Length: 221
Image 1: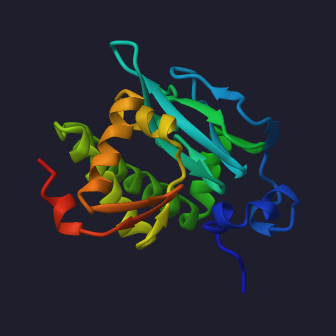
Image 2 (image 1 turned 180 degrees about the horizontal axis):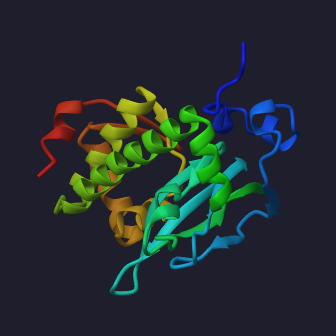
């Protein structure tokens, strides 16, 4: 059975090693970065499709008042800011920093256009992925509109439970979570402690167990 172009994300090693006939003539380059290295700055030009093929990165945004706002943690294999490749203002909206040793594959824009014309499955995956990212950003905006710190935490924990089950492991430490919520770290620690005291959640290092889902939902105002 012939492989289709939607394998480019999931079987990225086949692209790198030339094992996939569909992509045997694709022009690309690979770059490795060390842990804690700034890979892209906010407002850098996005003129190619960048695929995170190995490792994990975090994305952060500098707000207008100069605060650092954590956006998300991305694990390979995933494209980085693909929607901005075809934007009139094609710049990275966030800083991208490696949290492990990583590898990024760069496919020039003209190659992406050619792949889309030759491989409808690739074009479909590209569009589908960008649509899903729009949903993610909608959820992120909903979180930012919640007024209380405990409400923000409750929204985040309920989302994590829906995606990973109950209990689940946090990917971020408290400093990274504070950046994600754009709040002081002591305020985050105090709010988490209160949720534990109220028997809404249980915390065992990075393991979170939701004990009272309804109590968390009551905080979403």
